[in-house]
Image (tube, rainbow, N blue to C red; front, side, top):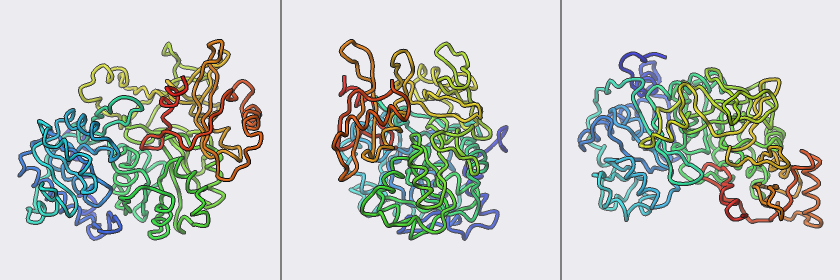
Length: 515
């Protein structure tokens, strides 16, 4: 990578290079309401940089973003980076208390917020000690600064700040399954690292591609999908400010005919099983789909390929490593596993003693990554636990087969032993959802009358399924699929499962309720 020993600003490589190479008039982003060419985006980011300087924000200080996926998002995000200022995109589904925590923790000087999201923070913005300005994206600024007005007369010339490749460029707050989120500090070079590994060598993204991501830009996964990868080759992106419902995603797939669709297991399953959209198509231009957030069940991957004729590249990534580091690849797909290491990444599986485990045994996944974060903000102990030398401890349990493919078993704190043998909640869940009555499933440990742990399942049923003898049918189904000791001893039928905003099952909530 260029620039590792001198000045390097991520915006120069991501954006200015496209204009210099003649793509200034090409569409970079559309949000169905407005459009930005690469030339437009270059001018907008220069205006944002000048605005931030005018507001008194200095290099390395933070600005928070609670913004929907509109064309304003890349303008603000990249404009701050151009100025050497650190943007902090935040999950748009947090609570008021969570926003108060993150704004205080990051010491953000400016908050950019979408008009529709302002009511969630209106009662706290006046009592954040470091927050000096609120800038609203939309028509009503609620008495604060209006982004369009602030940029209207701004100077379109700006000398990009000569940052360093290993200087923090932006933060992402991890969505941790428990507790308050952690500020993950990413470097200028990390964006290019993900583009040159997964984007180039797995996805094979090219200038002619049109991208659509269900995952939002504030997620590490969504940021790569909809911003880093397309901009790395001068491709175009369709942004979606609304909830990624099956109906909405089919609408965008058919309206814009994207070539790459980035989803998540829960969404793919919903799009396949939603009664209201059972006859919808997924556009005619799709060449590949990707999945992350949680392991993709084999049944979902096969059903999607059968219906639409397009493979889903299932992989695993993390906020700490910015994007996917284990993945299936075109021509090398095995549904039910996370694939092989992405070129440029090294992985290990270790036991509790830190010793590498052989093929077939469960171990914690460690990754050596060119895109690893610098660490967590103000959490030195947690940083030391996660980032150890060249290796990042993921907290994920995996097995590796003789062909070098890795299969997800669960989070380290989700795994449990039955009769001395590790049981993967995901394996039991994957078996349950292949039963014709089951739409979704989650499995947690529950102590029996003798205090021994056994699997307990929570299932969401398909509409109008036959429930006669259901419980015994489900238990026998799991026994036949994956082994007699892994079947759920207890099964609760529920209307829905607790999920994070990324579509991951929050098993800790079920464990708390089950115990």
